[in-house]
Length: 301
Ligand SMILES: Nc1nc2c(ncn2[C@@H]2O[C@H](COP(=O)(O)OP(=O)(O)OP(=O)(O)O)[C@@H](O)[C@H]2O)c(=O)[nH]1
Image (cartoon, rainbow, N blue to C red):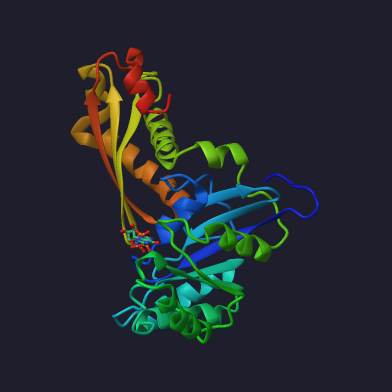
């Protein structure tokens, strides 16, 4: 962790709200990349990281708060505790709701989340999103009034994550609430390094460990797809080798070797992402991949 000069602000911003209110859209806009950016996870949070934004004198780490919606089952009390814990561990909470849905009055689900935010006693900002969907500007006023009554917000903003309305004023307000702190992630890493490349590196490292000297340098790992299903992340990855004989080695007797690579990689990736992982590993023979430019570019090499 780099030490920064006097007055550097940093912290974790929990983004909460019912599904579909636009949390990912907003964070992607703030971070400026389509893929959430991750790096080695600092000890201070148990939540998966959605993205990191670096600005003059600050670093804001946006984190997900799993289960921040009204649970329908009997686990309700325990889930509430978990959400409360993660909100309390954050430095700032960004509560989002969908203006187009709140038109006839703020829904019960939104109230439920807002109530958790209030109970966490963490400085919080409310962002009423999708204002572009309101037919008239005045339609927003009753929503703002209602939202103000839900918790003791530091600020309430009307935004549109897709149109870009009020995004920078919102960001300024977030930064004002960040405490003094270190730069948790090196600037270069978080701005240049997409998640898939980091995942691929982890899997490659495990493959090399397990294979030792048997398939030196013939192994490349490609992440085909990352799918998030609640707190489960499904990762489809391909291990490329150059010859059929190498494929046999990577698979191992009865698939034993690839299974071991998968198990070890999954453990690390789980720690990295903070979610449960299902890792789908395939081995493919790609002759001459090392001299195929398009292939190398796709892999970020
Ligand atoms: N019109 C409009 N649509 C938006 C806006 N922000 C997000 N959306 C749309 O709302 C849908 C849901 O957005 P997401 O960012 O995936 O919502 P989310 O809250 O991250 O959803 P979960 O990951 O399921 O919790 C997408 O189709 C977005 O394009 C907005 O400001 N205006």
